[in-house]
Length: 385
Image 1 (cartoon, helix red, strand yellow):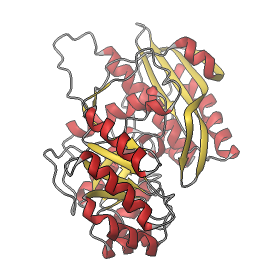
Image 2 (cartoon, rainbow, N blue to C red):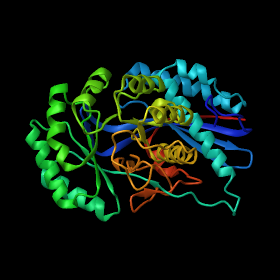
Image 3 (cartoon, rainbow, N blue to C red):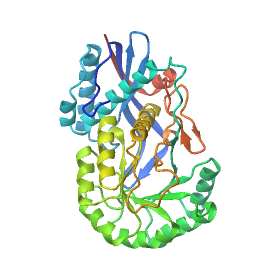
Image 4 (cartoon, rainbow, N blue to C red):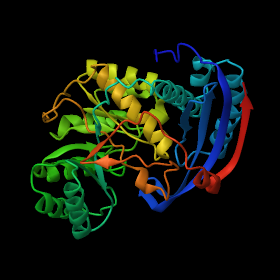
């Protein structure tokens, strides 16, 4: 897919949009609040040979009713346009802000999936190497975190992401990390996600205190809008700083890199506009000496499959460079945050995306579990080509 969007729209026989609401297995906690379910739009396109492509449009879980309604409007406009052979104008979608970027990601994901499905008839095609992914350790006490970390290592993960930010004192965070390192040893890579919960002084104090535990990076220590604060924090600490919530668009990523605010940018393709925008961010980050780690937006398996394809495209595009200040890995390929399907009661796929030894295969084809989709559908509509 070129930077401006798909080069050509194949002839489509059917286009369908499905609005789903899938509960989380347990309420999802972060520094912005508690979430009990995930709403998104699934976009299904089918060509005249019966090949199917699936994409997903997901907004921030705290999106306003106005933003949610704007995405619904865009999806209703896009479905008949695609069926009629008219791809959406990417510049116009980008002008719609967050809803436009979400819709852009869904259309791009569906088209990329359709192309992949159309190529499955080639028996000589080699299977791509799977994508390394991290395991997330939820909020909890030292013993619970240590047990979860040990289980993740036994399953083959070599990168752990510890959710933090709710600790009232620095000592509480230190106790969690001490127990975790005692359980898994010094070798696994360890990331801390503060979810924007700290102010500058608290962040500096806590990052200095946890440095001895070999932290790969601290993600979003300050609030999303405080890009200048993150730049100042980088000058005060030796542990690399990553930005996640601050990277809500390609423009935001470029601004953060220009400010010198991050060693790592965590890019969620569903949030920034899909593959084309993600590739441009990776290129900008590489030029600035920063690393890109891809993440999900807590989508269903449809969205996760889309990000796996983007991770493969980024890897094959040879835009992987080591970030300044980061400890070298055996491979330049980053470990991405994509092992999130288990947060939902169902990923809506007929065959779940497997995780084997901390890696996820890039699926050539995925299919929906239709009864489960029906169970969680709020509305659906389609158009014929």
